[in-house]
Length: 320
Image 1 (cartoon, rainbow, N blue to C red):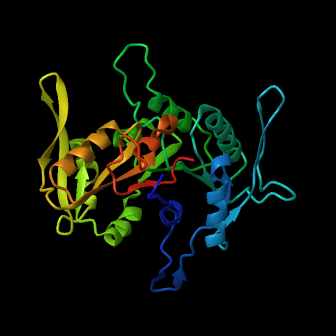
Image 2 (tube, rainbow, N blue to C red):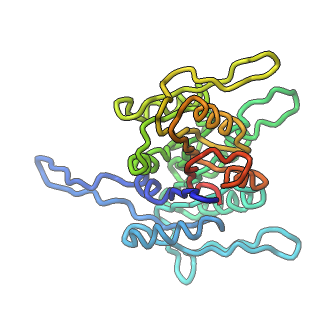
Image 3 (tube, rainbow, N blue to C red):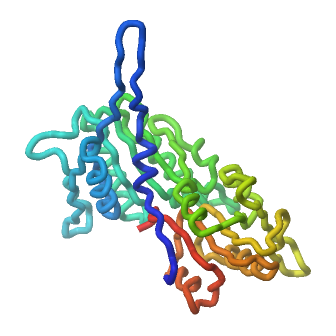
């Protein structure tokens, strides 16, 4: 996509795992707390990120390549790295980079999580940047499956290594999903917005818009209102139609970025961008943490597409 930007999660993942390294002084002795060292295991789609983390801080992160293969009958044949020729996993803090972009790889990675927790590790931290079932936390029809709850049950039923498994997720669609987890897994929620802020400054963006009140409640506090005009959009009924309106903020002559947690087909995002331009915005860009774009829906936002309204479309690499 022309002018489509990719924001890496590498820096924020390392930051999320960082422990204070400043020395602490007591009346008896001075002791410096060294950062934890991690053994990295990565899902198939996360191997490149694992290699970059190892290259960035080799003293803290050691990457072990895993073989993700299949038997002729289609069942998993997985050989986890770090166990041969000697066991470098037992007694260590393990970081697993995961991606649940389809059901097959999801089950494979759950099997590795179980195996690691039964291998006498000191701790397991799972980095799952995009929680794909986050939008399916409730049902409206009896018999429908709330897959956010079933994923939470799977995580909560993982074996215990003596302490809770830490599950790091970025910009979870509905924050209450964290309370579905119980037992042996605890959610550690983070945001990709710090990756975006320097790019807004470089682009001269002076207004931040949200496509609905929910997104505003979620992200508004992350942007300095003394720096950015805050604009909140929403849909109202106009006869038989629901149309986008600006409910708060001044869009005129502003360079605007619309912020949301994820995009699927992007219909609401497009309508919001078009309305802001109609109301006098100098330019409109968009940022989503997770660009799902099923069936290559991103092409509609590319130059020449029928939804080509954005000056720049920022996404992260949370989805392979």
